[in-house]
Image (tube, rainbow, N blue to C red; front, side, top):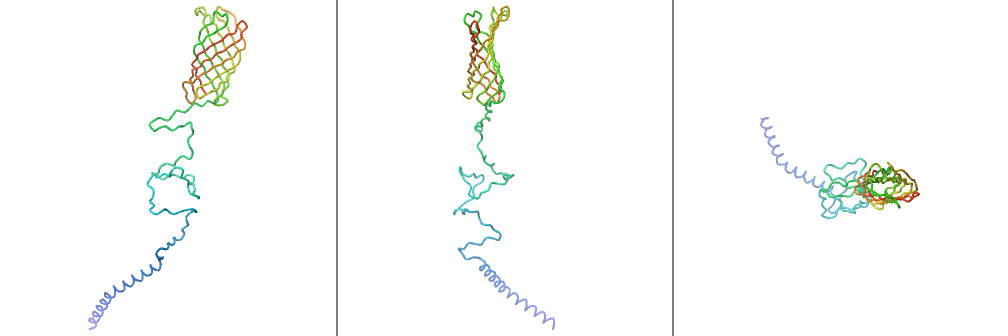
Length: 276
């Protein structure tokens, strides 16, 4: 009897629970929807930012309607100016992998000109500074009034000095013409000019030169005699080959010394070699 009553009561409670569960679940869902409706702002009103949110910088404007994110590798247009309040990245900042390198902050010097990718980089230009040393070899001639032994011969020059600025240098300059006489059997007429000279570059490759000093003419071998007098020198040259510290030039010069018996003139055409 007791067992039958307990079974009947259990079955009745289970049936009531099964019938009441959908009603309770519906009521709970309606209550949760009502709470969400109360928490959400009315339609058309802006939502409140989350706690701790800081507003945008001054002057910030939102993107226009239909705005899309820029594609990968996007670069700002030429002349773009960052908005007020923009700050540069901190020291030691590194670009994320895959991003293009930043543009240079300053333009490259004029001496480094941009070449197409298919060309090798341009060689560095000649920069004249500091010590100057050089020399030249070639042909020359000696001319003087009443000089039977004068004529063409071997010529050379040597100079040593320094650059005052990239276009002007001061130096000690010596040049000489050696004229063989008597069919070259050890007899030579030599006219040597020693000057303090200044050299000025009119253009990147073209220069002029002038100096004052002393001249010395002498005979060697079976001939005897020599003389010394004041002298002047003038020259003109063009640099055919240039590197960062070296130049090879073609130069011509004329010198004159006022010796006692007769003034003597040297003419020289030389290939010069110069180190700066």
